Image (cartoon, rainbow, N blue to C red; front, top):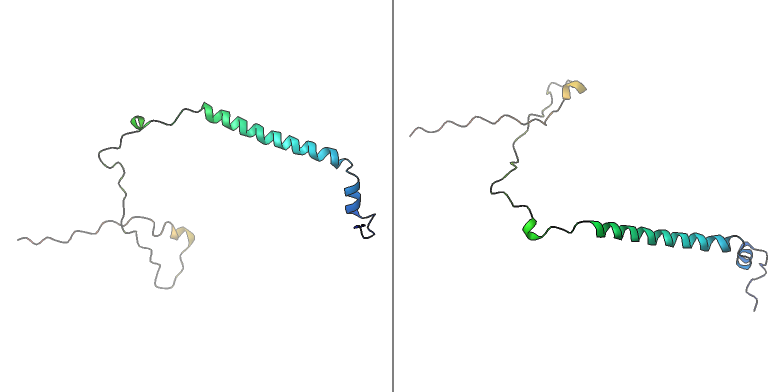
Length: 112
């Protein structure tokens, strides 16, 4: 049974018929890549084995009794733009809205 359909001189028939240099070079390149991957895995495993083990629960750091970081929240400075329609230059914009606004004055207490 002839399945070539008369394409004896086609590229597929030529490559399938004769391996040429590809028949020798490609298996060597494939073998080199497999050896490279195995070597990289082996080297990574050796480096992992040389690392110290993780600390035991007794060696873990102790949590402090009080907070060591206080996050500051509050309203930010005014970011309103001029209402008279004029434009602001880049040097006038500076850090608009990024600075923290001063705290408002406490309301007076009732002297009872």
